[in-house]
Image (tube, rainbow, N blue to C red):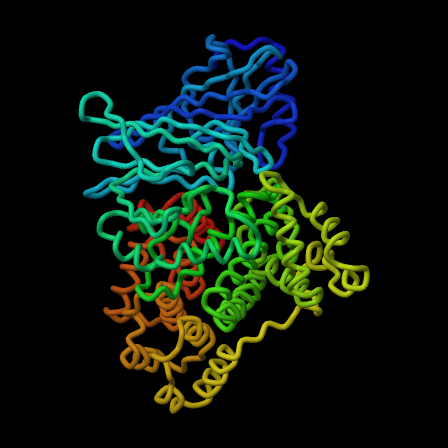
Amino acid sequence: MKWIPLILTIVCTHVKAQVINHSYAHPDKVSYHHLHWQAKVNFQSQCIEATATYDLKPHDDHPLILDTKGLEIQQVKSDGVVVPYELGKTEDPILGRPLIIQVKSSVKQVSVTYKTTAASEALLWVEGDSPFLFTQSQAILARSWIPCQDLPALRFTYSADVEVPNGLMALMSASNAHQKAVAKKGASTVEYHFEQRKTIPSYLMALAVGNIEFAAISNRCGVYATPDQLNLAHTELADLEKMIVAAEKLYGAYQWDRYDVLILPAAFPFGGMENPMLTFATPTILAGDKSLVSLIAHELAHSWSGNLVTNETWDDFWLNEGFTVYFEFRIMEELYGKEVSEMLAALSIQDLYQTMEELAPVDTHLKLHLKDRNPDDGMNDVAYNKGYWLLRTIEERVGRPKMDAFLKNYFTHHAFGVMNTERFLALAKKDLMDPGNYRFIAPEAWIYQPGVPENAYPIVSQKILETDDWIARCNASDEGIKQLPWKEWSYQQQYRFLTNWQCPSADKLNEFNQRFGVSKTGNSEILFAWLMMCIQMSVWDDANEQVMSHFLGSVGRRKFIAPLYKAMIKAHQRERALGYFDRYQQTYHAVTRNTIVEHLKSE
C-alpha cells in the first residue's frame, strides 16, 4: 500500500461503512462522464494490461471512489501527475475492494493503470486451436476488468483502443461495423478503436476477441461469428432487420445506430447479453430452424427497456426484464403470429411457478431485497416472467392502444436515463391506469407481495391446451404415445410435453427416444428437458451418458447447466455431479461455475 494522508484513510473507513447499491462508489460526490480505455490483450499470460482514464464531472474536493475486483493496480495519475491512492485491505467476495483517489476540485482527469488477474471473474479465456476471450459484466462484474463506478444508475460514454494479436478481431459494445485494424509492432499485433457516444451503465461494457468474421443482414444489422458458424448464424438470424422494424413500429426509433449479434463460444453463461450495438448470444440458439430466435427478439427489445431506460438499482431489476419479456412477445407476435407469442407466454408462466416453488416468499416480490446479497440472486423468472405478467394484465385491463402509447412515451421521455419502481408506479398511476383500473390491478400487490395475485390475466394458448390434452392421454395410457403428433409440433409444444409428461418407467423413456429421436435434436431447449427427465428417472445407459457428458462439456449456459447439476444432487447422484464438475468446471464462466458451486454446497 502506498503512503496515504490521514484524511484519506478516514474517508476510506467512512466509505466502507456505506456501501450503496452494490457499489463502494459515491457518484453524487465525484463521478465521470467519459471513460477512455487503452488496453493490450495478452492470450499467452491470459491478462489484460490497461489504463482507464476518466473525464470527471465538476466536483468539490472529495475522493473519487472506484469499484475493483481481482485487479492489480499499478499506478494512478491525477491530471497527468502520479498521485497516491488507497485500495481496500480485504476483498469482499461480492463487492471486491474500493479504490480511493483523493482529488481536488480543480482536477479534471484521473487515470488508473492496472492488470487483470486470474480472479477477474468477468473474463473467460477460451482455449483451443483458435483462442477466444469474452467478458460478461452484468450484474457487477465490470469492476473485475475495468475499475469503475459499477452501479446501473451511473451512465457515461466511452472510447477504447484495444491491442490484440494479429489475425484476431476485437469487438466492443460500441462502434464495430466493418472493423479496420491498425498494425502495431510490426506484424505481431493490431489495434482497434471504438467509440460509444451514447451513455451506458458499466454493466453494458463488453469486449470479445477471437477469430471472428462478419456477414451483413441489412445496412444496419448483421452477425459476427467464428468462420465455422457464420453461415448457420446468418441463416438463423435472417429476420433480424424485420425484428428491428417491428420493434420500431411499436415503441419508436432504434437509438443505437447499428444492431449486430455476436455468436460466442458455447461457454457463454447466458442466452444473450444486450450489450449496446452488439448483442452477445449463445450458440445454443442455432437450432437450424429459427425456432429459438425469440431470444434475439428479447435482446433487441433491451435496446429500449434496459439500455435506453435502465433500472436504477438491482432491486428494480424487473423494470429491465419484465418490460423486455413483454416487448419480446410483442415482436414475436408481429413477426410470427399471436399463437406463437401465446405459446411463449404460457411456457413463461410455467417456468415462473416452477421457480417460485424454490424461492423464499420474499424473493418472489418484483421489488427485490438484495442488500448484502449478490444481485445475481435476483436474476430469475420472477423478474422476467412475473414482471411480464403484470404488464400483460395491465394491457388487458386498460387496452393495448393505451398501453402502447404509454410505453412509447415512457421510452421517449426517459431515454438515456434511469428508473426505479416507485417512480414507475407514480407514472403508471398518473398516465396509464385510472383509479378504477389501478384498484382492480393493484400493482403494489404484484410488486411488494409474494406470489402471483388472483387477478392475473389468464394466459391461454390453444396449441398449449391441445398439448395438455395429449399429456393427459399419455399419462393415462401408453397407447397415447403411439398416436402422438410429435414431429408436427412446434418446439414449444414438445417442451411442454417433456416437462409435464409422467413417464411410467425408464424403459418407456428409452422407447420414446427410439421412436422420436429426442436425444438427437438440434434444439437445446428440448435436449435440456430430455436430459432433466433422464436424471429424474435415473436413465444412465451408455447412449444417454454420452449425450449428457457432451452437453455438460460443450455448453456453458447457466440456464441449462446449473439445473442439471442441481437435479443430479436432488436425485442422489452427487458423485456423478461432482465427477462432471471436476471434468468441466474450467470450461464454464464464473457466473455459471459459482452457481453450480452454491448448489453443490447447499444440498
